Amino acid sequence: MKSTEFLPSDYDAHGRLRLPVLFWGVLLLQARTWVLFAIASASRDSGNALLTLFYPDHDNFWFGLLPGVPAVLAFLLSGRRHGYPRLWAAFYPLLLVAQLAQLLWLPLMWLNGEPLSGMGLTLLGLDLFALWWLGSNPRLRAAFRVSAD
Image (cartoon, rainbow, N blue to C red; front, side, top):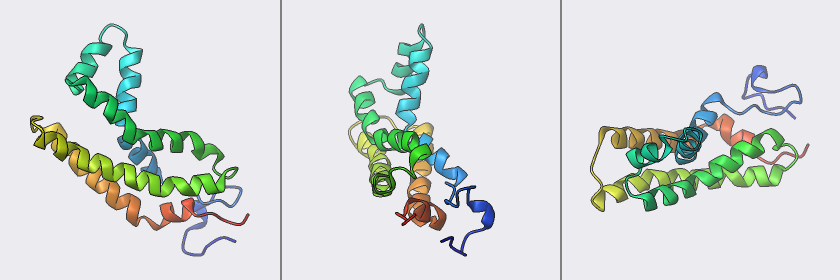
């Protein structure tokens, strides 16, 4: 049964709640190291230079891939979420934990001697906003709820 707290345009043709547009931006933010990896892989000649520019310490790059795993999997599963409703519902807390991990990642790197930069502060602000939005958006929470279709 459709909820009356959302507009009819918030539902797709099958009566399922659509994912908010900002959700895709949050997934990209969480999977930013994966996006960088894809871009570096696509640019053969300058790929290593690009990775070194953003991750001078290559160990940080490999650790940076970890918090993006739930975002990549959520992106892949989003088109089939109606087929796996319990699995889809389990991704919501995973995405919150991954966002919290990314929010704490940069200050920990700064405490370990990584230089403070404008890009780092911008990412910290975006991570803080993404965590707040993931936790407070009612439409997103409803889209992850298991329904008895």
